[in-house]
Length: 243
Image (tube, rainbow, N blue to C red; front, side, top):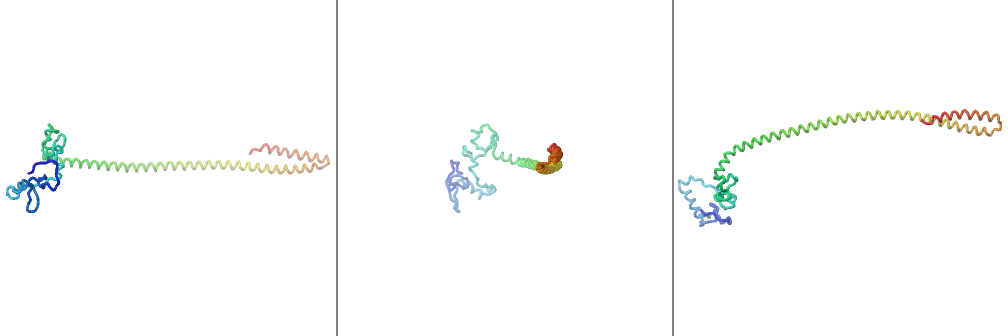
C-alpha cells in the first residue's frame, strides 16, 4: 500500500482502499481507480480459497480524527496516564514513561466495564427519580400547608375585623345616645330661652306703655310688680345658660 504522506489532497486523487494519494494508480474494468499495491493485496482475497474467509473491513471513516495531530500517524495506542489516544512516536516524546496499552486492549477493557457503568448509572437515575419525586411531594405538601396557613390567617383576621366592627358599632351607639341626650337638653334650654325672650319683649312693650301714664300711684304699682317678677326669672335662666 502507499506510504503515509503529508497533508491530504483532494478526494479525487485518493485511493478508496488506503485513503491516501494514489501510488501507481490503476483502473479496473468498471472504471474505478486504486493504487496498484492495493489491488495486488486485495485480489488474492477474492481468488484464493484460504483468503476468502478473511473479513474485509470498510474504509476508515473520519480518518483525520484518528490521526495524531503531532506526528500525522494513526493513533493505535492509548495512554492511560493522560487518557488519550496516541501514535507509536508519542511513546518517545510527550508520553514517555507513561502507562501505554494497545488501543484495542483499552477498548475491550472499557467494553467490559460498560455494563457495570450502565448499571451504576441506571441506579443513579433511579435514585435521582426518587429524589425528584420526594422533592415534588414536599413542594405539594408545602403548598397545601401554605394554603392552610393562609386560610387560618384569614379566619383569624376575619374574626378580629368582625369584633372590631361590633365594638365600633357599640361605641357609635353610645356616642349617638350621648349626643341625643345633649341635643334634647340643649333644645329644651333653647326653647325656654326663646319663650323668655318673647316674654321680655312683651314686658318691655308694657313698660313703654306704662311710662305714658301720669298716674304716679298706678305707675309705681305696675312698675315694681313687672320688674321684680320678670327679673328674678331671667336671672334664674341666665344661671343655666350652659346646656
